[in-house]
Image 1 (cartoon, rainbow, N blue to C red):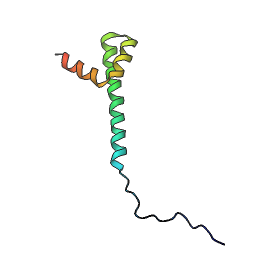
Image 2: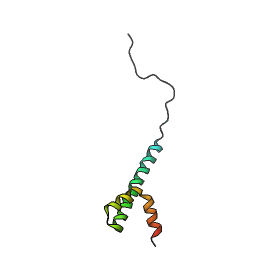
Image 3: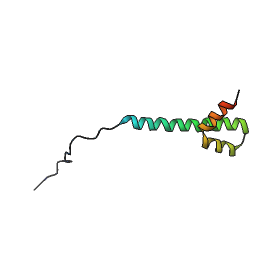
Image 4: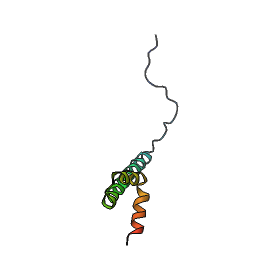
Length: 71
């Protein structure tokens, strides 16, 4: 009678890279912040839900455009 005592050892375990998950979270947070900022700027300028959605989609591109075209 054989008993199973757990997983078989196949060598050194692969190393986890915690910085990859952290950078992905940071990128998502930056994208979310960029979208929110673009929507807020768009609403302040145009008072249009349509333009807020369009400019929220392009997020950081619109924020950079707005910053460069305003004195």
